[in-house]
Length: 550
Ligand code: GLC
Ligand code: CA
Image (tube, rainbow, N blue to C red; front, side, top):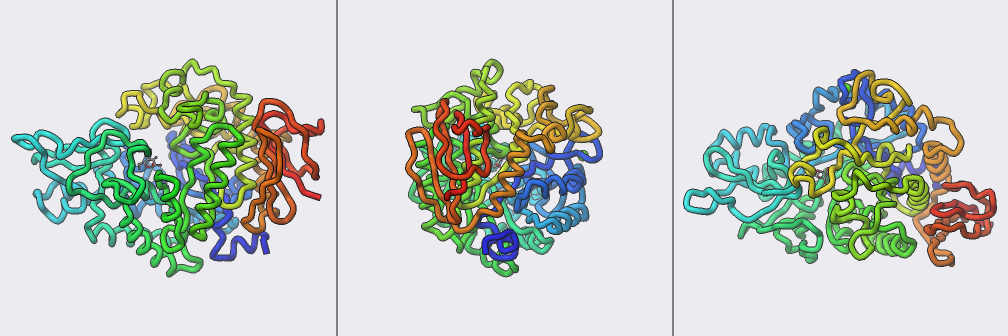
């Protein structure tokens, strides 16, 4: 029952799927303009199939002015001409499906780009017009309306209101090029239902929902906010800006649309909410799944991982959904680097306040060999967990983050708008090295839109392909074995010593991780796969091994 065919054919295919995230502008560039494109991805479908992944998630490829890496969408139903065409998109869907790989696209419903036709119309239309009512326009305070309508910061700093020529202001939780929609307006609902239908009809299997917790807002009185840390977000569904209970009405409506397809379309929420609020997004009457980012903020520590795993399996159980697991994505420092960044606040989070990044990114002197060991061990542990795992392009190469991109080559508004107070996310968005030489290490025949460091050569696909012991081959082996092993969604902990975790899955196999810096005894069982060499009968420091139990 548990084999590949079963997972593919059923409406439940997503429950334990492995989803590989592609950041299209940085994956593969066919025409050599330095920007990744759909043709580039089409050319790598064999590579994707060689990974034994179940689905690909494409970060935004829509027309965009790139004020926020494409998360400023100018047209939700088209492809950026720099990236490709709708015909090429159809070709990609077909080629992926032919190889048994499903496709997720990214939906950004909280805000559009300021270049979106609706926002352009709003700018041309008068105060109080139907066109302005699709966004959040308000008069300013002060004698002549010269002060913003409320004291509101934006995520990337500084302010969350921008003034337009006739004197009104519009709200934006992110950059000023990303005006927030007003979801109390029925037209906005209809528009997004059309968009979801458009992509579903084109064969898209699932959707990743950007900032899913922000759509519904209480605007009376206008919200005041100076920080976006989770600590200041109300945890009971009444926060004026985030995670309001009413947001789920939207997703119940979306679910009705998803269920009209066979198999039903699926969705995963990006919702940075208090963990106990996450299950609501993962409800099967709603989006169905939600990202669990707890491993992203966790230290490399057995107890911390155990807590995250137990909590999230319990959350998933509550809703009948399955848990998700993420070690890297386009917003965070790649885990091969992150896992050796010194502990942040209270030794719990890795660097939530960006303290290390801001002060030490250029002189950090991190132990990257240890980082890679930990990253591989963390990934094997993750892939052994019940639920679905999200991988980020390049992690299968063991890529560290590029922490020394010169400021004048950076693109991330989070860096510019905060004047370097927050980290730049560009370090995980540097185009992939496919070859160890060439103008952009095989990314394309031309250059690369973000500078690639010379050490990228050592991580190239061509260097690792077919090479025993390479990170790429470890991922391939793990994903192929996983597909055969995965049965039910039960996990049982087995007793193990301090600093280690050992758990069993149905079908008599187990995963053992040594989080410590010293080797420990290899548990009984037949070794199926290990993140480092266990031939000496020991599990080396910072390693995971999968064992068949006798
Ligand atoms: C999400 C995306 C991030 C983007 C933000 C605004 O958090 O992952 O990249 O900047 O939303 O759309
Ligand atoms: Ca290109």
